[in-house]
Length: 311
Ligand code: PMV
Image 1 (cartoon, rainbow, N blue to C red):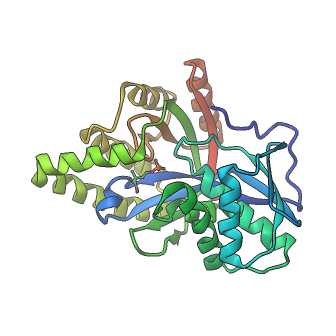
Image 2 (cartoon, rainbow, N blue to C red):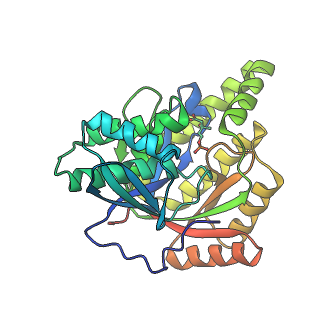
């Protein structure tokens, strides 16, 4: 994975603002059909800092971007939304791009938080959300907002299409492992592939949808109660249902198996599927490290990600 190594020379101090990367824990794809999904802001994220300037400029990992880079357009949209003056922005990212981990939304939220500091402009969560969404529209057309909501959070959020995400109170911190199982597939193509399942067999499709809906409801309860063994079992079940929509691949199955063999309580694809990332849930930090190491021994790039941590 090409994410920056968080143990590298970067030091997070009060000059930086942070936003979280995201994973979908339960309910991806079903959410397109109105089912509630559970997503989480993870302990890896993006850091930004800014200062007022006469014109916008952006540095990513120490490199100055060309003025016609798309990120500069996103900065202008973010500023327009907030009525803010130009700025010099710097980013440090711990997230791989284009892997379904919400890297762009995390940049947007970190940038809005940095601007709020440098321009001494207090922002409510809602204003921050809207500004980051303006940034996201530059890259993703009409995004649902889940990536931005997760980027604002360090915990789990429940979201359904068209309504504002709600935070869920965790009884226990979640020790996840995120692994890039294979090259990511296009979310649009995967969503279209699922729609074909619906056309082919609508009755079966509706059964799967209601199974996922009740699984999400149960998972919310279990997360509130800290019943992690049962949460892991529900992850396996959600994965099986997604595999039934042909969203899994040999690489994904392989990554899930390695994680489960290394002691994961459950493992599933996360996000669009067809490639991309798998998440596994560990009982504790020690087991989380075992899983990361087992995946690494198989040549896979994995990292530990915690949810519900004070950052
Ligand atoms: O792979 P991601 O993180 O872009 O997630 C896609 C989630 C879907 O449910 C598959 C699509 C959507 O719009 O909700």
